[in-house]
Image (cartoon, rainbow, N blue to C red; front, side, top):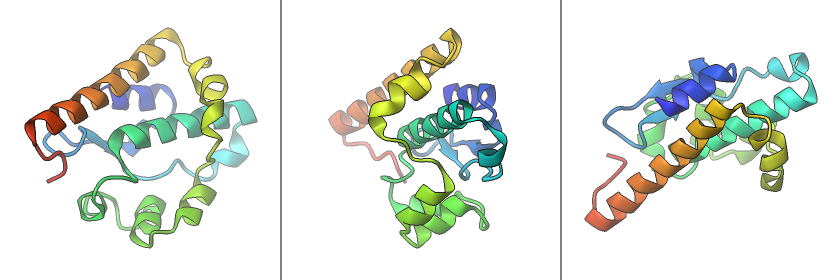
Length: 142
């Protein structure tokens, strides 16, 4: 999938779980390994973090019905804990949360052409699924 390829190219491929018949087609299983914060330079960490948030938005991780998301996440994941406890601080402490206005500088300009096209297509696919569901009355999260 587009999400899996984007994540793979950016070192977080193990976090993407396909959902072929539910939601938006994929979910993120967790936040990136916190140890990466000490291993990556600021530019690389900001790119990875901003991409994670873009993927999270396209998967509706913080918007989808909680019961639909929680059953898909591993028991020990930080993401599961943060969502289950509705603890935004835990999530924000676990993945760098940059000002959305920095997305262009921190991510978009950094992506190679293939990843840029994948990100644009992923956002377009998200929008088309949501518009089609709204027009038809279909439920995305079951």
